[in-house]
Image (tube, rainbow, N blue to C red; front, side, top):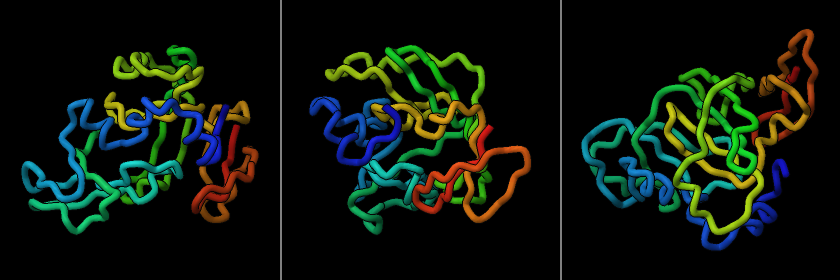
Length: 196
């Protein structure tokens, strides 16, 4: 069960587990500094602003914003949160055991959706305790972490490694990479991947 279309993915989730797909609810339950549009931030600073629910994926519409106090000018479907630093890992858990761990790298100057490379790595990553009380029965759960902080959960596998590959380099323009195989895999502004 790799990438489902939005309807299939949404309809496969147990109704009592839908809170997991709301990144604001997930962040609040995890104790992060966050809030919906219309609330004030604890101090002037840079915060991440992004959609509360985004089945389209790829970090679409996520961005850093300097916020002095109020958040009224952002779209009502968005929320703000503290910014985490460190490695960005995408982990596929199968029956609560890590089966695939992938490290993502991107330039800090690029938008959040624009990744340079995803590569399999060896890490020890434990299944998040917060997900032990889910009502649905999910063989695969994909979790995204930044600096060991859980930021997203999907009830599916990472679709970018369904080719048996160990590396996936997104293609945004018409880049050519020698000794790698191109696969067409369009999503948002991405044209595909070079894989190996």
